[in-house]
Image (tube, rainbow, N blue to C red; front, side, top):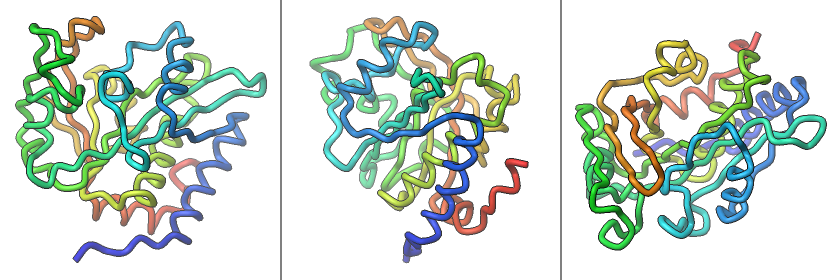
Length: 233
């Protein structure tokens, strides 16, 4: 039987990282309206296109099954964004969800371009089933990089996803450069595997070759239950 989430421990966990962001003069905010999120992210000149997974006109997210986070500096300008949504893969798996393009479009027959394609060869993606929290659309402004904010962003989203969904898995897709430059290590992913997604989405000018990154639900709960923020020191 899946462990019960301890709300008090989650609140303590989130407080550690919210305070850590505040010490870096970054105010974190949470939202649930993805039309608003799209208007925020479109105004960020250095951010790559948002996958249609988070576009309300391509893949609407039901209430309670998605959220986004932004961070603003002392001038109220956006310095970071990230989004998350819940996939019900109780009768499927993450690899199949990607390759069917349903990870990106509510109805691929209607919204996908004829040349859109996703190939997933990561073996572990076929073991990722059940309630799956998908984290994506990571962006951090250049002048705030190298300050530990990637770790803070990852921790806050994990805490929120645990509190809201108590998922069986947390997963995402990450460019190979994140491994080469050490960003993946900062982000604190327990597992990563090549072949997560060889992706082409024509309408959005997206052509990526991403790693699969993931945590199991047990690893997520253990992380939240036993973290005291020492890794931030």
